[in-house]
Length: 93
Image 1 (cartoon, rainbow, N blue to C red):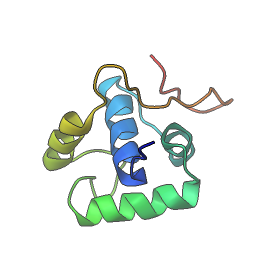
Image 2: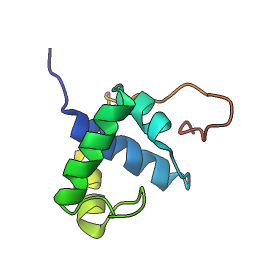
Image 3: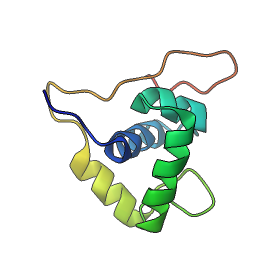
């Protein structure tokens, strides 16, 4: 069994949401990545320090976009999608 680092799952979830024109919040990203909201905050800090996520918004930089496109799930694998919550933006198609 293989596991995927939370930073990669977060990058994939953010890429997926932004590709659909959504503006995700921390809770939606946490659910999509399968981690807690505090872990999302830590992962975002790491991704921002690497220049992959914009400093002030939940948006990808050009290097982040390239990394997310390369890391996107291959055929047969999928990024987990969050369940709908009242008042939250949906990441599902």
